[in-house]
Image 1 (tube, helix red, strand yellow):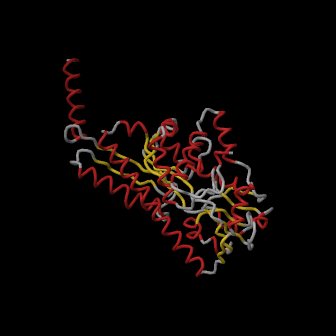
Image 2: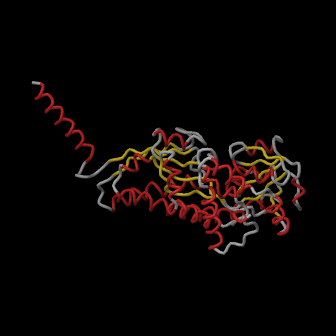
Image 3: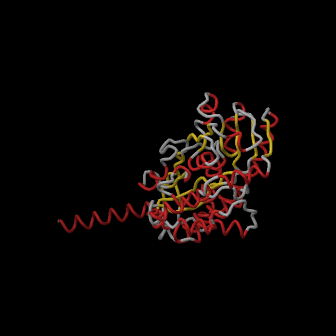
Length: 357
């Protein structure tokens, strides 16, 4: 009887598995995608309108053996801003939009664009470089492995500038002023005698309005939707550089369970997503800047010599970053050199060569 019961149980399990799996060698994946922000932001909108449907489209074109049932946990419904990395690591979410900018302790190597500012304002180039580095460098793969996930795509922010309550014509005008900044951007303010105050796009408007800070270091596509120019009308195009702020990731155990063909689809769509989002950001930055001017913002170009003074007045934050992380066993020197080499290969005119000092 016991043997017969085991046979019946085995048959039942096989039948259940067959009903789930469908055709031979097929797999059905229930994937929850978490994001701290909603689809009002371009990179989240592109996940909903391009990344997810494009994966479905390509899986179907590949024969339809593998299928995905998606759950979109956007707007912080599953994990808040700063909590997505851990959620994907622990399997609470299967995929996510991880804000690397808010993970300096767990993802120190992904801070490189913030620790080597004044590189390029070309957001499409920054996105391309970050995608290439993650594809080429085993050190970055190991970095993500440690967090139990796989990098699939980059979210890069357009060129950073300043918005203030007061007019700015020279670097000294920032001295002693409180400037809001997210994550490592605060180092850019500290280096010129300003007082950096941490914040994010959920708090920036009220913080400027109520005097928590006098201005803000940020990028145009993040600033315009929250109407910062209404409370800080002086925009100085300081050209501090575009930066990498986030990544699409997937739980490593889940990714490793996929067939090579399905893995390739997830990766390929991630590369295309990165290109599309960066192109969108570049276009929107121009559109939003024009709208701000129409709505009363006073926009000026920072003199070239003042920008250079900002870059050269700062302490070498990249060197300090390398030293700290090398002491912990993270190969920051190699990552910095790779990043700077790619900027040089793209013929970017560098005002400061952080890796050569």
